[in-house]
Image 1: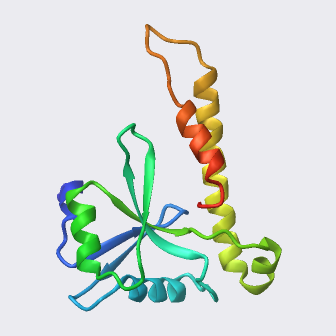
Image 2: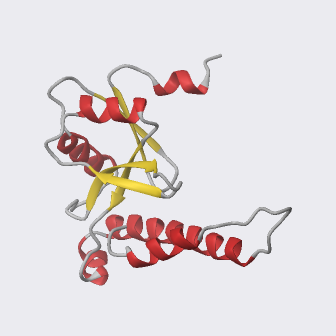
Length: 160
């Protein structure tokens, strides 16, 4: 039986985590770029338009806050995979540019709108959980300090 960690180190494979919990894996060579993965995901997820989507790297910041690095279309996947394996990052497919008119997105591309809804629901659930933690009293001297996370997330709503 293979260990879970061993699955992360398959050569020339990028794992992309989707908002619905699925993981899509992509094999690549030295010429494969982020844009190639985006186009493949567009096809696999039946999306008509991907202008609101991006691949991002997620990692824990110095204060254990989640941070996201937006990947550029022309970046080679070899570079991305190297960073994800050696720096504890995950590659996510996210709506990173909120549409000006979500109703228009629903009309033009219902699958993209559904993805936006799932992503927004997940963010809302995390924020609610953090608010509940902030209201808890200290327990054996441990204080849950999540105020910075909630305020940063509230301010950065446009950059999902």
